[in-house]
Image (cartoon, rainbow, N blue to C red; front, side, top):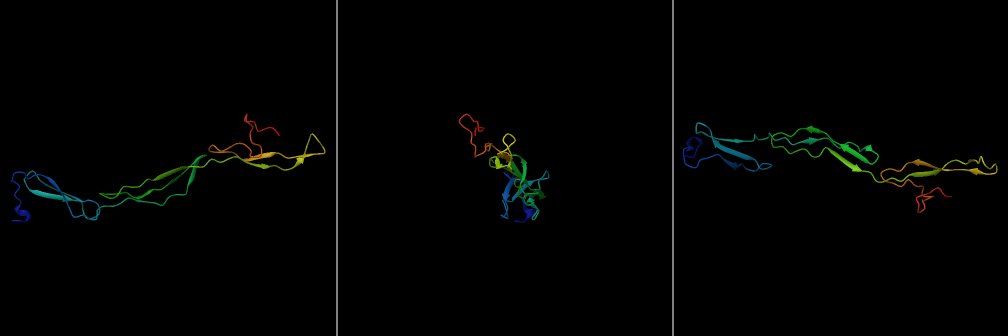
Length: 149
């Protein structure tokens, strides 16, 4: 009376329905229905068939342009069945503004005055990502000119 062979598929209201199986990891679904010959059947995910996505460790940060870096990872195991989706595979970050770096050059004889020596300021690292291009020892005046001594 209660075995699988005693299902009465001719009853009014017998239709395909989804029933929840015991909770294993996520919500596993069991589907029940009748086939074209009126036989009842159920389907469910094969136990142990779920394979979660697995990814590699992050790479080192690599500069992609003057103002940003990127790091990546790869999929080492593709998800299958109801396995969890893969996380993001690439991250990008902006670099902080960098001001120009200035240094004093070497002392040299002044070609216009044999009694003097001269040295000049040299930009050894240009500004990037919106940093200041001006030498902090000689900031620009209100007009933006930093050439006055």
